[in-house]
Length: 414
Ligand SMILES: NC(=O)c1ccc[n+]([C@@H]2O[C@H](COP(=O)([O-])OP(=O)(O)OC[C@H]3O[C@@H](n4cnc5c(N)ncnc54)[C@H](O)[C@@H]3O)[C@@H](O)[C@H]2O)c1
Image 1 (cartoon, rainbow, N blue to C red):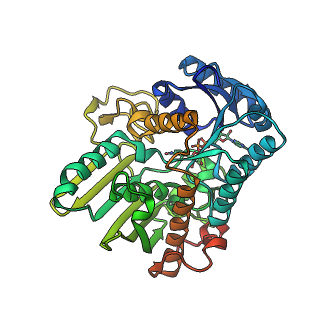
Image 2 (image 1 turned 60 degrees about the horizontal axis):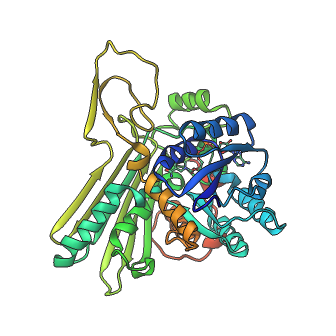
C-alpha cells in the first residue's frame, strides 16, 4: 500500500482489461501497478497504456507468482479467459501460501467459472486464502441501473408496492476472441457468456435496496437455446475465417441465442419473475443492453443504444472499421449512437471504485464469489432446462457435477 492507496495488478491484458483501465481514471484510491499476461509484449503494451492513461506506473510481470510477490501489489483483478480461471486462481493461492506478497483482495471477472464444480473450487480457494473477494458484475454498478433502482424503490415502490417483473437483455453480433466461441473453453455459448449479466441485473432490480440477496429466492427456471445465425453454412465459413479453423460451427456449434425465465418469490411470499434474453445474433449499431422493470403503478426502461449523442456519417465518410463509437460496433456510416464514456456507463468505473474502497477499508464486498457461484448455478439450471425442454425446480439434483452438452462439444444445435 502506497500511503492510503492500493496497488492493483491485472491478470490478462485483453479486451476487458482495456475497459478497466479506462474506468480507472475515475478510481482515486488505487493505482494500476502491474500486468501479467503470458504474452509479454501484450503485458508490456497494457502496462504502457496504464501509464499513458496516468492510472498508475504499471510494469509487466513474467508470472502470476512474481506479481503476487511484488511488495507494491495489494489486490488483483482476475481477467484471464474462462478456461484458465481456476488455474489462475490456484497460482495466486499457491503464491500466497508459500508466503509471498501481501495481497488483501481479489476481484474476478464474470463468469466466476465455467460450471458449478469449478465455481465451488473458486469459492474454496478464496476461502482458504482468506482474501477479501469481489465478483465483477459491472452492470449492477451502471449509473442508469443504480439510479433507476434507487428512485424506483424510494419513490414508486415505497408508495405502491414492490416491482414484480424484470426483463433484461444483452445482445451483440458475436465475441472478439476465438476462445469465446468454443464451448469447451468458454463453458457454453451466449447463455454462459452474457446471461450471467442479465440474470444478475434482473435479480438486483427486484431486490429492495439494503435487503440481503436471500430476500428473494429463485424457485424454478425455464430456458431455451438455439443457434440461429452462426451455424448457417455461409456464417460457418465466415466464423472460420475470422476465428480460425478450430471454431467450426458445422460440427461443434454453440448457441447464439438464449432466453430464460426465472421465477422468484419474496418473503411475503409474492411471485416475481426475471425474464432474460441474450444473443450473439443481433446486428444493430453495436452492443445493446436493455432493461425493463414493471411494478403495480410504474415501469422503468433503459436501452444503452438510446444515447443522448448520435453521429451522422454520410457515404463520403469512409474510414476503417473500428469500435470508436460503441462496443461491438457494426457500422461506420449512417446515424450512429455514441456513448460519451462507455467504461462509466456500463458500470466499470463505479464497480472498480467500489471494490477498491472495500479492499482499502478491509471490508468484504457485497458482490462476492458467493454471488458468482449462485449465478453459475442458475446458468447451469438454465442449460439443463434447455436440454430437457422443461421447467426445472431450483436447485436440481446433479447440479454440482453438471456440464452442459455445448461445453462438452456434444450439442448439435438441433
Ligand atoms: N464484464 C464484462 O462485460 C466483460 C466483457 C468482456 C469480457 N469479460 C470477461 O473477462 C475475461 C477476459 O475476457 P477478454 O474479453 O478480456 O478476453 P480476451 O480474449 O480479449 O483476453 C484474454 C486475455 O487473457 C490472457 N491470457 C491468456 N492465457 C492466460 C493465462 N494462462 N493466464 C492469464 N491470462 C491469460 C490473454 O493474453 C489476454 O490478454 C473473461 O472471463 C470474460 O468473460 C467480461
